[in-house]
Image 1 (cartoon, helix red, strand yellow):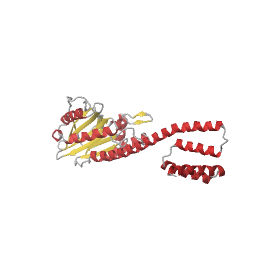
Image 2 (cartoon, one colour; image 1 turned 45 degrees about the vertical axis):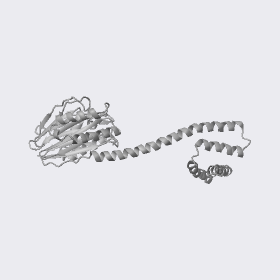
Image 3 (cartoon, one colour; image 1 turned 135 degrees about the vertical axis):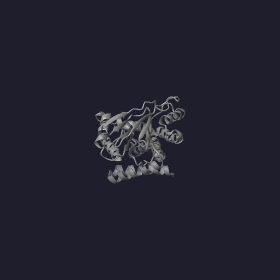
Image 4 (cartoon, one colour; image 1 turned 90 degrees about the horizontal axis):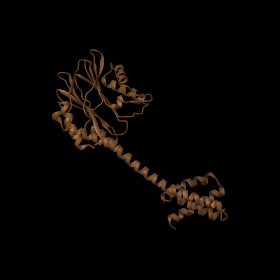
Length: 335
């Protein structure tokens, strides 16, 4: 007798025991026995078929209506069995995919990590949090003797393709050190790289700036990115930092304009992604004025505490479930 035949006979014994005694112990043994059925890859429709055969042996005088009912059940279970096996296969593939995404997310965090530099004349705060496992936002700092450059970008797209695209952006920027001192030229070169290497349905927005620590000027250019804010301490006013420019990857001949801001003591450059300004709450999208109000409310704090406070408040307004990737950077000139 092979294992399969033994299991069928065992099932008959268990069913007979239950029908004769109808106690909890017999039910429990039946539940435990289901593991053996799975190990032998006995399908649900086979179990029903064996069940019917056992009942025919035990109750040979079963009515035709009862037999027909069991035939109907068998047909149902055949369809169920196919669907169940397909479901199990999909669950296995889903678990494999989730495992691969975890690895990819970990690799992305390692590849894209950017240390926040220490600059005597600046107080810097950064908060970048992905809405899902993979981050579609990117930020980067590069410091030299007389300047600090900062980039913040957002992929119009999600998931692994966006993460791979963002990795390409990082290494493309690393390969263009000669343009680092001129934000508009860096964007023009980066745009040609994106246009040539990124799928036409994916676009990248970016704001790239350079802070000259000698003259305290911030030079910047934008490629369709969410406007940041400039806070002027002398007048206690916020203004939008518009930097007009086409998103990266649309046309390889695009030119970008360079802008500049002179920073006095207490002035702030505020850079962000649209996950900040397009924060969606139960009352709708949050207004830019509300972001400014949150920053103003926390301006007495160090830059890192400001960005942390803004993030936690927007997270609360979204019931602690981010709808989009969040990146907020503050450069505050020290008094």
